[in-house]
Every structure is written in C-alpha cells, then in structure tokens.
Image (cartoon, rainbow, N blue to C red; front, side):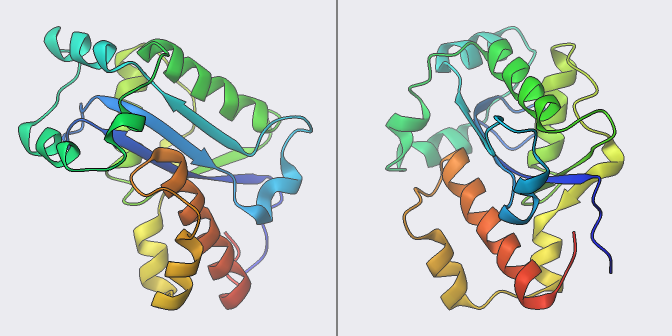
Length: 196
C-alpha cells in the first residue's frame, strides 16, 4: 500500500444521550493520529474537544429535533465522568460550527478528510445527522467514512497494547476515547505497515 499524501485521518468519538441516529450529542472529541500531523496546516491543533450545554440538548429533544433514551441516561448516571461530560457551556450549534471550522482549517481544499468512528454507523452517522439537522453541510464526504472497529478486526491489537494506549486518558469522554483510538491507529500503522 502507498501513503495517501493528500489525506488527513480524523479519529472521532462522541458522547451522546441515546443510540439512535438522531441522538443528542453532549460531547465531541476528535484527534488527528501522529502519522498525519505533519500534513496539518501550521498553527491548527491536532485535537478538537468540545462539550455542549445539557440544557441545549434537552431543548432540542423537546422540540423533536434530536432524541435521547432512558437506557443511555441510566447508563450515564453510573459513570464517573458524568459531571465532566454534562458540564459544557457551549451552545449546541456553536459546538457543531466549531467542529466544521476545525476540520476545514486542518488542510487546504485539496486535502481529503477521512473520519474514523468506532463504528462508522454510530459516531459518524449521529454527528452527520446533527450537522444536517442544523443546516451544516460539506464537513466531510460520506465516501470518506471509516470504521475503526473494522480496522481493529483486520489488524488485531494485543490487550497489553490496548491497556497501555488508554493509560492517562479518561474513558467515556470524547477526547479521552479519541486519543486512545488514535494511539491504537498509530500502533496498527507502525506494527502492520498499514497505510491509511
């Protein structure tokens, strides 16, 4: 395989209030893996981390724009990260706009952006739905949706590597999980010679 020099890979992790396609997103975390950081526009961060106001999520759910479900909300009640994840101060629309602007600043118009979700039918699909529902389009092409779960199935990661990669990161936060998955992607590329 050859390295695609006009591609920037983004590892995406979102925290949500449900599991349906229209689920409200409370937090977006995204990281450009180490192997692609040299292609980023100078001065632009390789990470995106934003938490919206819980009240905005509830308002949008009440208006029928987004959804939430009881099982996910019950799950959050038992998570040690609940306070952190539910303490955002940014409006929902501002979180989405900030994400689009970050993606667009990563490279020039010729740069292809591939977005890796841990299940492209979850993270990518839910974020795309929220963006579309708020009139925000052309953040990345649907052709560039990638599935991190499939990558891990094709290139197995030993438990010892997976545990080391998660050290120092807070599980069940968008940025913590995105950093972890980006480290695993770097390991897969280095170990297997997989060019992504």
